[in-house]
Length: 187
Image (cartoon, rainbow, N blue to C red):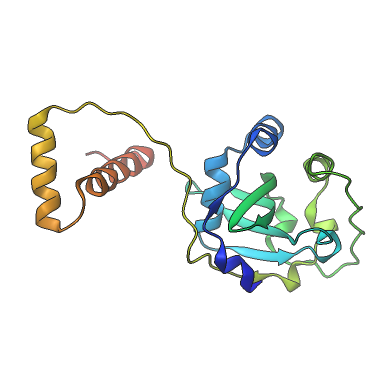
């Protein structure tokens, strides 16, 4: 699983964005968060690694939602195939005899299967490993933001004092405040 260390981003398109949301109300952002938060456990899916390596992930979102994610690595991008809430049985490895995962003709067929089956009946999590993705970055979106010149000047001054780009400082300030708001803490 050393190849996973080469992952640098995510591969999203209509095939994997919409389906995970429609079936399980899992957003692409939540999928991505599960790759950055601990604990993070990944198991190989040797049976379905014929054309490309497949993996199972057990992880958590920033808000603590536990997810079961099926993914592959294409070049240096992680492509999420299926994502849903983890079942209680997925939390620890199972020692009972496992069912055989069927062969899939397409990502859509694989996504459909995992949407309706409990992974603990099919995946041996005793072979899973804790992993890190040292080069992986979350997906970003460019936005346009209008700020009063005086606010921008103050932001640049603070950024200069901290020796960071002002856009980075703005993202840091915004992330801190959003986290506070989500946790219900006063400013």
